[in-house]
Image 1 (cartoon, one colour):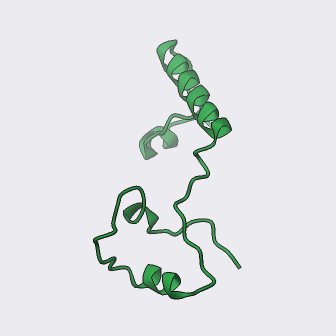
Image 2: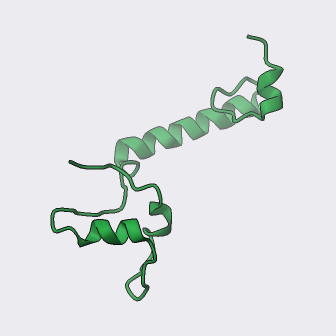
Length: 85
């Protein structure tokens, strides 16, 4: 049995918490099991993923700069409602 991410992980990783008591009962329980290994989520941190992120970002900038529709634009509910189907 395994899990890929922990919903509250943003508060637990990417900084040194060695001298901190973690007040997350679920995380503490998971840590107490000898058959559980916990590591920070690193899926986005591969060469391919970083290249894809950079390319998508550059494409988004070009789309906006040249006045084209940007497929990755985050729209408000009002904008979505007024978009023709």
